[in-house]
Amino acid sequence: MKVDKEIFQIAIDGTASSGKNTAAKRLARKFGFLFLDTGSLYRGITVWFMRENVDLGSGDAVADALCKMDLRVRCQTGATLIFLGEEDITDSLHDLDVCEYVFKVASVPEVRVKVREIQHKTAEAETLICIGRDITHVVFPGAKFKFYLTASAKVRAKWRLGMVRENNSEATLEQVRTMIEKRDYADKTREISPLRIVKGAVVVDATRLSPYQVVKKMEAIIVKKLCREG
Ligand code: C5P
Image (cartoon, rainbow, N blue to C red):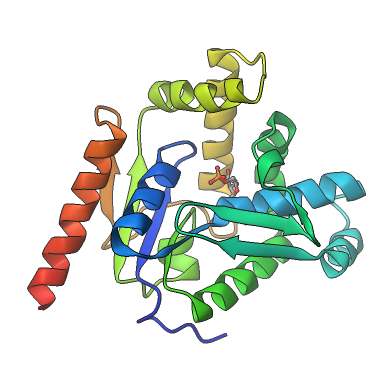
């Protein structure tokens, strides 16, 4: 499917819990873009697959579940909402069981094809800031601005623990860190569309930066490039 490269503008890839979400929402507000968190799409499919007890090892079962699935995405400036039919499942996307299973679902080729279809369709209609793992090199390789966001595993685990605790989970820092590292490893080493730093992407290491500093840094890069282009 053809994607209008002029419509799609900012692509951000990066490791798990590296602050992509916070940075992208702030940039979306700043530049008036809509926010597409592609991890939410994989998480939404994971919720569906868990409900349907889909055997990931069976191509037929996966194809059947994807065919029956009615996944809908609504991009806003400050959020990506995910629906199964009319049901808003956004709040359950970060449940621990979803976090533990999503990278397995995301490594199924048919799932990635389906998500790419949704991403391209969404980008045809909207000006997006899009975050994920393969956005800069597979989904929107022609994006005007490309970033790779990361931070140390220790710092990311602390950030994620805050979110996990909001959901009343008893998870410890060590458990969260292990889960993050496991997810990074799976995302970087999988055969299809692994997470990587693409040529031309600006790497932002947020280990010693506040969310505000991260956004300011990215914003400065965007504005500088826009000014250069006149
Ligand atoms: O970004 P988030 O942590 O919500 O992503 C959840 C998982 O979805 C990732 O660990 C990865 O396995 C998968 N994902 C992906 N490609 C993307 C976005 C997310 O494989 N573009």
